[in-house]
Structure formats: structure tokens, C-alpha cells
Length: 409
Length: 164
Image 1 (cartoon, chains in turn green, purple):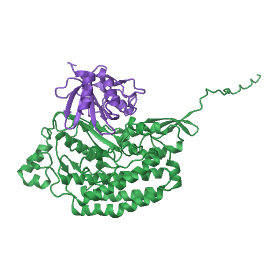
Image 2 (cartoon, each protein chain N blue to C red):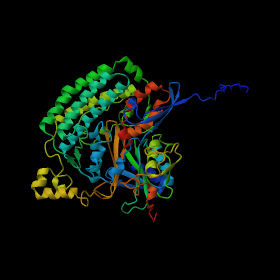
Image 3 (cartoon, rainbow over the protein chains, first blue to last red):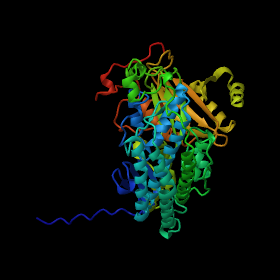
């Protein structure tokens, strides 16, 4: 039998139409994403031509759960949205609820909420800049930043008994009042610990050649694009949008306190880092003013209004307290908010965190929509990434501070 | 705010119904005029920032006349003024025009409303599910979708408002 010659391999003629792009799957479990998100990158060599985010891995139906939980219970769920600064979510949620029910909280509560929200902002920004530098190879700054977050957790633990998810706010007030030793802790943190850690991180990164090279001019977001793409918070302010809800729509005690809105014009990763660093300093300024001026008086609104949960001693020792406790815990009682809907937003560390609450007059919201800043910012990500090399991806991702639990809810 | 109201009244007559609650000022407009109203607000009244788009299912809501509501939260990035535009749409084919031509930020927000409520946005460049998996058949934030249980929507009787 004659041997047939082997068929030659078919070799494609090189043509200009030939597909030279290739696809890289990035995530959902990749050290640089930190959280569970996935990117499908179309690459030309190392240059990213197109990035298509694929999200939803952590979707757990928070908004559906909110329709089943009452105005106090849902605070435990909003805690878990942006778990880097849970207190800010709580403050935002009860800010919206109190606006719906038209509750004017006490001055003492306003100040305490302001302090804890700003402490959470510091802890959020510390993690963001620390993780951003970690992704670019600078592990030391991450350690200094993370070490200081522990102190913030200690402060939260002292006031609420819980480090990570304090669930500290309640409709019309707070879970418990703070003690004097808590005030002393905050004072020490602002005067001693925080400035030291801030200076350490600044010294490690601000003039670090590698860090500057990898962040300067990377992921530039222009002012027009920032507004058009709904960016808010530090991301927008780094692009020159001077929009800060603490100044524009003063809520809590921000109207009484002195602070500046930090902005930059460059809109790149470095600008976002610098804005966050400077914002921490402003937060410290806010706290140091607020902590010296915490008004005396009750922390919850008047018990006669039948809006706040009475404390345990009132529940067990007085008939009024017992009745009110029942009223707020039985399904057919609870709050009776007006049948209407509203949107209320606060300035969370990542940007505008708003809640759109629809109430049908029951004790739980009919619909509670969250405006999650991470979700909006991650939508900008493909635009920022186009034309950059794949090594820039962790820098841009780190500068946006995407928290997947908030992204997917 | 009165300027905005005047502007809308001049252009659209009685089509924009004004509602006010606390500090929220809402204009309820009909779906076919939505894009005109939004572009007027964006280009002439200075509301250049789209804060959020949210959907609401009014199935069990007291005295509701329409099934779905979609709310556009707008803000003025200079003066920080806010305004809310609400449209009401109904089954069987809840459809709205996409605001993507005005704001690129509307991209994912509209995808989420589509994902959760099944409201279709005409003219959206890439209207796919965003949080739920691609093969998912139901719209989970609709009120006839169960809170508990693993069942899918096709296992349940469709619950459609009769009077529309």
C-alpha cells in the first residue's frame, strides 16, 4: 500500500482583517480585584482595547429584603453594602427614613452621627489608598493604613459592642448613648494616632517614584465626562466637580462645622489618591471640632413621639415604656409614615449614597432603592481603561474603590 | 424651582403634574414626553447630573392606578438643586425611551431597572441583564415575585392590574 503524503498544515495567509485581538478573562477571583467582580478584556498585545465588566456575583437581593424588614431592622442589611464604612450606610439610611417620617433628631445625636460618619470616612479612605498602593507593589503603606483602621474599629466597638457591622443608628436616634471614655478615645485618635498614620502614608507614597509613575496620567476622567457619567464623591471631585453634599445640602451637624471641599483638576488616579488623602485631613478637622462640642441632652427624640425604641430599663420598669416597646415591635403596629415617596442622599466616602423610599403607610418600606456609588463608578471603569495597558488596571480599579457588596447588593 | 416649573409649564402645558413632598419636587410626565422633558431639564434648566434611575412596582400600593413607576433623580451640579421626574408605565409591554443619549451614566442604571422590573428602554445600546444571570427568566423586584422560596416566576399565576 503506497503511503499517502501527509497533508500540509493549512497556513492562513496574513491579511489585514486577521483577528489579532485576544480575550482575557480577569476575575471573578483575582487578587487585584479584591472583591468578586469579573472583567472580560479584549487585548491588543498588552493594551486594553475594550473592557466589559460582568457583575452580579454577590447579588443577594438587599432591596427585596428591605421590603420585608422594618425601618430599624433594615439597618443591619445596609451595614453590609459598603462594609468598609458601614456606619455611613446606616447614617444615610436613617437620614432618609427620618426625612420620610419628618423626624428632627436631637442635636446630640446629630453630632455623634457626624463624628462616626467621619471616622468611617477616614477608615474607608485609609483602606482605599492602602489597597491602591498594595496593588502597585507598595505593601508598607497598606500596613500603616490598616493598622490605623484597627483603632477606628476599637472606637466603634466601644460605642456599639460590634467592630465591623455596628448597626448603631435607630429611627430617631441611636442604639445607646456614648460614654465619656469614648469621647476620650476619639480625641486621642484624632490628635495622636491619625496624624501619625496619615503622615506615614504621605511620606511613603506622595514622592514615591514608582507610585507616581504608575498613577500619574492614568485613567483620566474629564470634568464633562464625570458629570455626564454621574460620578460623585472623591472620583468626581478629583475631576474638578466641586460637589459635596455635606456643603450643598447640609445634613446632620455639617452646617455648624468648618471644613473645605477638596478638589483637583487632573482627574487621574493620582488626583483621586491625593483628594482622598486630603479629605481625611478635613474629616479629622470636622471630628476635632465636633468632639469638643457634643451637646448635652438626650440622644433619642422625645419618647412621647412613639418613634424610638425605649431603653431596656424603661421597657421593664414602666408601663409606658413597655407599651411603646410593643407598639414598635408588633407587625400590625410599628411606624405609620405618610403614603408617599422620597429620595434622600448623604455624602458617603465613595460618593453620593442615596435611598429612594416608597412608603405605603406600613411599618416597613414598600420599596427601598439604594443609589450605590460603587455601581455608578464601576460603570465608568471601561471608559477609563480603554487604551491603557493591563498593568494599569489595578491602579484604576484601586483608585475607584469598588466594593462588590455595594456594587451587587 | 419655580423657574423650572414655569419652563415645564410653558413647554408642556398640563402634561407635567407637579408633586411635592418634604424637599422633593417631582414632575409626573407621560412616557411619550419623557425624553423631551429630560432634555429640556438638562439643556435649558441646568440639571446636568443624573443621580439615579429607579423602578417601582405599584402592584399592591394603595390607590395606585398604574403598574410601574420609573423615577429619574436629577441634580444641578452647580447649584445642587434637585428635581425628580417620574413616569408611569404598564403591562404588557412596559417600554420607555432610553436616556443614554443624554447621559452616559444612564447605561447601567437602565440595565438594572430592566433586570429587576423588566421595563425595556428603547434605544439603549446594550440592554442586557446586569445583576441576575443571563438565563434568568423572572424580574425579581416585581411585587409578584416571591420573597421566599426557590420557585421561578412561571410557577406563579401572573398578577396583572385589571383596570390598567
